[in-house]
Length: 460
Image 1 (spheres, one colour):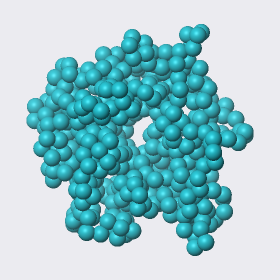
Image 2 (cartoon, helix red, strand yellow; image 1 turned 45 degrees about the vertical axis):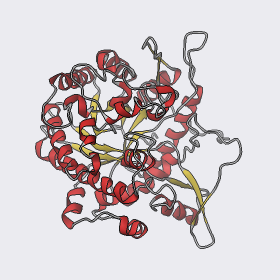
Image 3 (cartoon, one colour; image 1 turned 180 degrees about the vertical axis):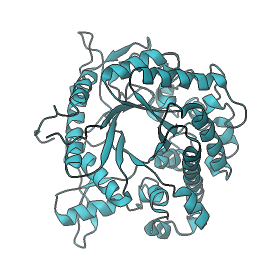
Image 4 (cartoon, one colour; image 1 turned 30 degrees about the vertical axis):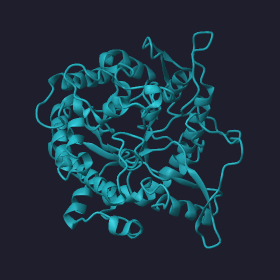
């Protein structure tokens, strides 16, 4: 018997700056990613999102690619500065019209739009006023959310507030490798994080109060996921502990600091102790604002570390053996992350899970026969989805899966060097070529996962 629910949502995903292009047309204002990618040395080979996949001019064509897959959901983000060139104030009707066109094209093809309100592209004008460091930023985001909900909620019911704050704050405000390219003191990074979590809460309140269709609302964080080296109780507990610990190294990359306030109503004690005087000042009212009722937990999973239990039960990292498979991003391939991740996160936060991102940066090109044969991606997705099937069979409430990404696109600081798509993009001609994985995924969706193999050779 198939473990995937009958009403399981199979989908694909993208983000505005990565696919839209049209960066300086029809009144769109610049975002921090326009500024960052235009700065020499910040993005691979000087690439920018000025054209990207040109989806801004190809909404109908891309909707056809999405619809022909047979997916029932498409997760995409809104470009804040396309709607409000200055972030606040004057609206840009051309931007609203573009999303009207996209939403209508999806619905005509039987695909539900799942909107992410913020996928990293803060309007430049707001960054110049302080960005997420400014205490007004939750209000800015609230007002932007209200405009989006007023315009689109007659046709859109599924919403995500923030995508991966650990990344846009950790890499953007702490490490400086993503927009806006800052390297701030820890205290400032934590203050910006506090404001972003308040913005999340205020956005949820706005959606609940104003949506024209009954809303389904989620949050899409990412964190320091770990899987156990064996299925002993000791190793499983060590992996659970490692997953929810604010780590000494890479402290911005964790689950509990971002998720506990949003889903449990408090900052984690271990994190407060770890950050000490750098932790932001907060009130009970702040925590109440952050802790709004949610309907789903968006989970972005590509890989995970592996740990075993030490002599005192503490997590001990288990290094990969030499030659173990990795992606083109040098991310270790760990299919069990799509079992343990949903399991650990649903246990702690008591919410239905939606896999909002999962996919492979692979080595793809057009072969001599004119097709793109990406057998590695098919195998990767097969292995991960078998583990997700296992999670469903074990009672984890998984409601959907969104493959990243529908098409090759601008991969942030890596530019166009990495290809995650089911559809190949010729960045010179903008031709779209469905890969073998596209056709494989269409077949998988048609069977609701029934045609996944029952057993697999070990990964090595």
